[in-house]
Length: 122
Image 1 (cartoon, rainbow, N blue to C red):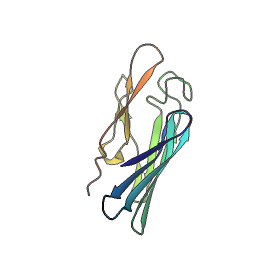
Image 2 (cartoon, helix red, strand yellow):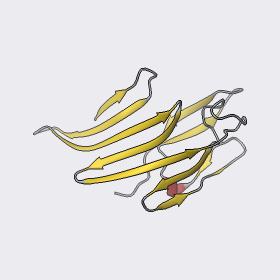
Image 3 (cartoon, rainbow, N blue to C red):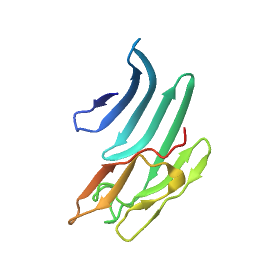
């Protein structure tokens, strides 16, 4: 795996390569709006899958004051539009969304962003 990050520490590219001979197998590129992923592009062979995330107000009533916690309105992919639901802590529940990140509300206006395995079936 090869990872690339921007100046703010956000992952912008993830690449899976074979070891011998060295060749690119799969590339995932992330487009960010501050701390929210707004587009994910996965290239594997000749196929390209695009996921767009539509964001609104987060759990504290601002666009990104809580780091996006509770603010994901919709996930748009080729196979449909998916609408997540949230618990009282702003944790998203949307199995069909195949979220890359989950959000946990913590002290005050801070949030933790935790990496989660992609639940996309292979």
